[in-house]
Length: 147
Image (cartoon, rainbow, N blue to C red):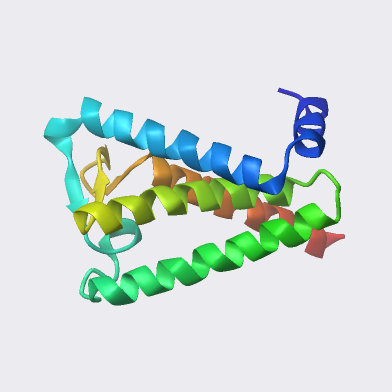
């Protein structure tokens, strides 16, 4: 897909439609992959790579809620400028992955991971969205700093 497609999609859809579409895409693909890999699920009580697993469920939900809220504020402020931006795509990936993991945490008390990286750590499709959204955002920030 080229930049023209993203530009026309961006201009023809509201922020809420974009947020809803990405979130539903992540939620459905995560649920589908959990069904496919049901015998290889790992219940992650912490954040990425199992960090902060000793925190109580309430604190983790509060921290995630604050990050998602900050992400939404940034998406709306960028959209208000009415220009195509890779920053919005990065934030949408981050938000869609975050909502998916938040949903798992609220419903099941943990996030179900199903992919393994050499048995060192486990991850899921939502983690990939968060990771690539953050990576894209970091690359954009570095590129702006270099200018």
